[in-house]
Amino acid sequence: MTKTITRDDVLRYIYKETSNEETLAIEKQLLVNASLVDFYNQTKETIRSIDELRLEPSINFLNNIVDYSGSLKFESIS
Amino acid sequence: MKKYEISDSELVSLYINGNEEAFKELLIRHKNRVFTTIHLIVKDRYLAEDLLQETFIKAIKTIKSGRYNDEGKFLPWILRIGHNLAIDTFRRAKRYPTVLMEDGSNIFDTLEFAESPVEDKQIMIDSVNKLKGHIQELPDSQKQVLIMRSYLDMSFKEIAEATGVSINTALGRMRYALINLKKKMKENNLAYDKNNYPR
Image (cartoon, each protein chain N blue to C red):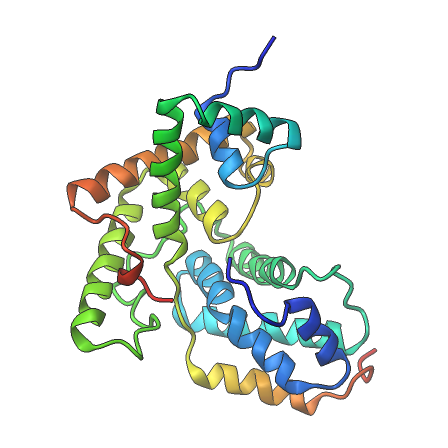
């Protein structure tokens, strides 16, 4: 019997958390199930918006880290 | 995920062979992702910067002492270091990061707008602030899963374990969070436009 593909399955698929077998089954359903396709597209779009949000640290901290790295010799740490 | 000409794995190898510029490239490549992850947990910019520094110093020590062995997966490895340091900070303060988003006004004040024209910057700031507001309006349980999955890069299985619920519950919370966000974005005509977001 074929397993019913749910929206939670599609969500795991978007985040690449499905097995090869599940992936094939979901992709097959996405070819014929308009409701799932709609959910897939809407969800991908929302996730993309969230993922694009990025904060930036101050430049001083970056310089400190780079300076620290330059001052440390390889294999000098126990 | 961005594709680079030189992979993280190659940069780590170059760094191990004494190329400090390779480390600088790794730092520039991933600093914002790690910083955002830490910031969303500790909710304090200055503390987040301290923890970011500590994260990369731990990474430097591990690599330079010859103990780095992460099969080329540098980003998940360093994200996990940052995440653990941020969570430890909460534990020391005897707080649990149930509500991970900050209510302060300056959380998104240093986004990468440097090369954009002034009017574009304003559009970006408005879009980002609206989205941030929508995320903050979500129920705590949905907000928590959304942040853990999107910014901490945790799998649904890991989220379920960390929050003491089933995978199905974690998935359901994420799904409702995304549906609610989409609804709010639609109401505010905040459709995704890649030009509205910083690179």
